[in-house]
Amino acid sequence: MSEPRPPNVIYIFADQLRYSSCGYAGDVSAHTPNIDALAAESVSFCNAVSGHPVCAPYRASLFTGKYTTSTGMVINELRMNPDHRCIGHVLTAGGYDTAYIGKWHLWANELGNHHDPKNSYTPPGPHRLGFDGYWAAYGFHHEYVDATYHTDSPEKITLPGYEPDGQTDLAIEQLQRAAESGRSLAMFLSYGTPHDPWVPGNVPEPYLRLFDDAAFSLPPNYHDANDPHADAWARLSDGERDQITQWMAVYYAMTANLDWNVGRLLAGLAELGLREETIVVFTSDHGELFGAHGRRAKNIFYDEAVRVPFLVRWPGHTPAGQESDACLNTVDIMPTLLSLLGLPVPDGVEGMDLSHCVTGEPGPEPAAALMQCTGATAAWENGHEWRALRSKRHTYAVYRSDGAELLFDNVVDPYQMHNLAGDPGDATVVSQFREMLETRMAACNDGFEACTWYRDNWTEDRVILRTATLHT
Image 1 (cartoon, helix red, strand yellow):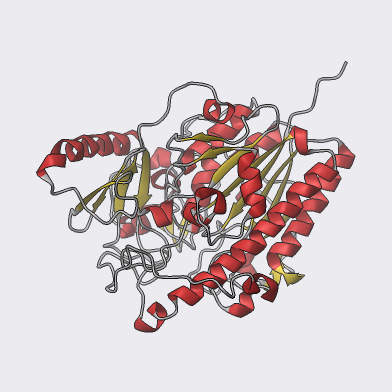
Image 2 (tube, helix red, strand yellow):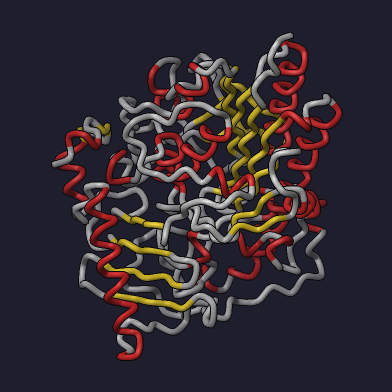
């Protein structure tokens, strides 16, 4: 009698979707019935965070299970060093047919000019990090109508219509292929939405109409002055501040379309008879601030930027509708998924296996998630670096430039409006977090370097040449 084949893995991740903008997380403005239904069938990690809330650093950590200070992907628009044993390598070696669809963001080594195939096309070989099967990807772009992608040629292929719809069509085709072949599929589907620009032409009109009567307002922790630690991507002009609530309407419309496509994908799984034998993960690379704390975008330790949805459904193996409060971090995803699949976790992985949390079993958990910012979003610019820890109750952070410390009690102060770092009554808590941060940074050889230190010591022409083993 033949052994049952390993489960399929479908890893769906949005771009810039924050946990707090999902209906199942309590947002009454969100139109996410399919994601909410998935949450009811899944284990939901309510304290999941993006360990470095920027597109490329997140992806580097996702695929390697290592922190930014070990991958060297310290800002966007760097070329990843392929000398890591990545999740794609392990999946391929384990007999999986891999597929990658959507945004890759680990090849381009030029700031800007991202539509040029020299930046948008990742050639077959080591820079695909083990994803050696189906490839329908691009570097990055944020135009979602009649967008383009590459397979195994620099020639661009146009995806007619709205990009997430077409990407979902491609994903369903891969599910059909898996059903016919009988070979286990590991597919990563990287949607570009709901990333800005939030203009009406960047989302189909029917989804905009869902929010015609919605009254969006500025967040309770909105600041009308820019955060002095913010980089150019995070600062807001007066004109942009006037548009925040209009932006939110488009953001929520994009999320509604994303939800529709998640529903289509899940329906495809069921129709093909693959539902019971497939692990589905739904998450995001980071969130969005919309003026909270005087910032837009990401790259900061506040919950709006770092806290992300993370749902795992594996029928018969994961308890439906259960919430885990484990402090799941980006680096934990690789060892957790590989352990669920019974595949080896490579040496050098810095994350923790939390597969027992997925299956509802007791086991060790991290006391807090270590989060990093190693520079401006995409520029070699010093002065924005920070490190932070997020536990089940607190967020502690410190800036490199001026040593400013912040401590928030996220239970009593969910909008993180009251910095407790200077409160004598919380001096012991601050001291404990300082010590924990020092220990955690030392464990991954994080020297809290300036951004340009990596430029000068790890890269050449925005190509990462070094790996963690050379970081001394």
